[in-house]
Amino acid sequence: MIQQVSAVCQQQTELNKLRLAHSEPSFQSLFQERIGQQPQQGVRLSRHAQERAQQRGIQMTPGLMHDLEASVEKASAKGARDIVVISPEQAFIVNVPSRLVITAMTTEEMKENVFTNIDGAVIL
Image 1 (tube, helix red, strand yellow):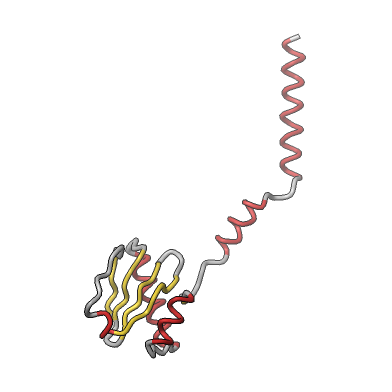
Image 2 (image 1 turned 45 degrees about the vertical axis):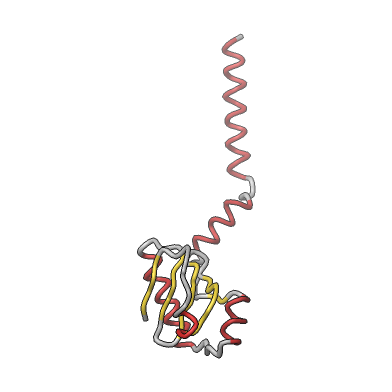
């Protein structure tokens, strides 16, 4: 009797292996595979940052965007999560993992502000 149960269990295990081998991949495995193949590139501006940049006359030039991207890369390599990027004319708060600029301000506005929840700074 024990041998019969063992044989049935063995057959069931083999059937399960065959089903898994021929089944379609799960959503999670496809999602993880896709994320691994397509690293996130570029820095994006939140709606708030877009509004602030426009209100404050900050031109988001390709050169500035390149500088922000380079700053995020440096901060990411050091393990930073939220940074302030400071240039002679403006400053930006950036969430490094999402590569998202949270807000933008001029250096004049920066003088009286206190930055909180920041774990890194990049000076341009």
